[in-house]
Amino acid sequence: EAGVAQSPRYKIIEKRQSVAFWCNPISGHATLYWYQQILGQGPKLLIQFQNNGVVDDSQLPKDRFSAERLKGVDSTLKIQPAKLEDSAVYLCASSLVISGGNQETQYFGPGTRLLVL
Amino acid sequence: AQSVTQLGSHVSVSEGALVLLRCNYSSSVPPYLFWYVQYPNQGLQLLLKYTSAATLVKGINGFEAEFKKSETSFHLTKPSAHMSDAAEYFCAVENAGNMLTFGGGTRLMVKP
Image (spheres, rainbow over the protein chains, first blue to last red):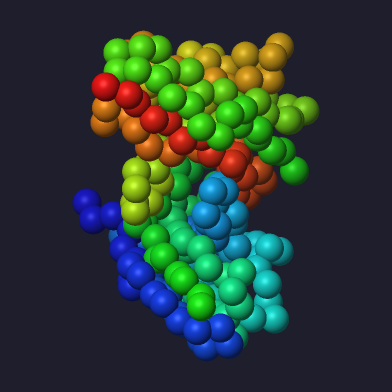
């Protein structure tokens, strides 16, 4: 079974530029997550989708970050314009559908390492 | 929201020695708890998870963790460290809607 795919693996941009990351979840996984992992810290959830709807985006800096999952499969996370403090690894994860009271394991992709200069 | 605290950002052990990585949670109800491992330049891989079925949870690569409600702890252990265990380890707790909150991580170094 193929895992969660992410691209690109690395990206270097200058501040105020735009950047986009792509994620393809495990086949059949309805729930998709984007996390930001700053160096030396644990991952922080940015946004969670179930199918093509947003479940939670309370920690997404909406003035510069946006994410979409138009057909309920692949997802794109965009930053526009980027700031120095956005330098981090952006991790995508997926899980089976959320169901009441049941815990579904999240499977993580390799991440995209972003450096903003 | 529930949270976890990992004590010790760096832990160093000798090869063959006991590995003990500490995690304490804050929750008023029994939580779902997880340990993930992250190797350099890779994503997170699930080591084990506690979902209230048994207090001692066995995971992959010889790791296990014990849920202790009285101590609000979920420490990760392995009897004998191997060089390949060198990585960063994250404890996490599940909040509503299957959302994970991670601790700050513990980097495990294994000396030959």
